[in-house]
Length: 256
Ligand code: GCO
Ligand code: CA
Image (cartoon, rainbow, N blue to C red; front, side):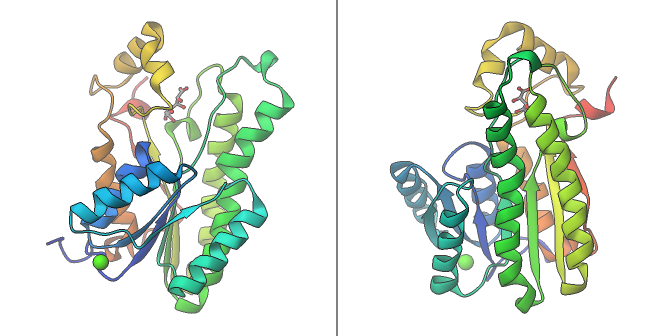
């Protein structure tokens, strides 16, 4: 039984990019706290497998949605479907994202745009759709999955850094405009976690050593170590928290 304030029973959540990686971890944490979770991704087989896994644990998914977050009409259609099926949404976790790792001088306009579209513009678009459902409810939680690269930088990920830094601005912009509607908007900034997207970082000995030696805890994070932050931001426990970023990074940003 989750502690009061952390009990999400009766709440409906949508987690983008939840068929794998950190998104799957967020979906499991919310489901364990009692939320009904709509899984989202682009791979039908992966979504089905995740939905089965939630059902086997006694926390069945509220549904699955397949769409490309960078495709405006597809997002509008998916939200129309969601409205039709559920008529509401309590929690949106904007987790889906991408990256391109190239030096600045090799980064094309296309590379830049692809990352900005997925990591920043899509978060605005999905939040706007969610807010249309949340405002009449007079309640809602929007949680952006940012990165410590929204606070810091390392070479070769310029668009990612710009998008995540922009996302922190978007959190503040939405927080101040929707506070009066009972809606909070916050971000979680993870440090280094061993996802598929981060496999190239793990496989590069120099980069992997840099991650471990830059993290005071001396190790990569475990995806489950992000669960507490998402449940906190999704629940009543965080009722007076809006427009801010919770960093979960083993001390990375605190360290020189
Ligand atoms: C990289 C990584 C990072 C991490 C993470 C760190 O290339 O350095 O992809 O961007 O994914 O977001 O916070
Ligand atoms: Ca439930």
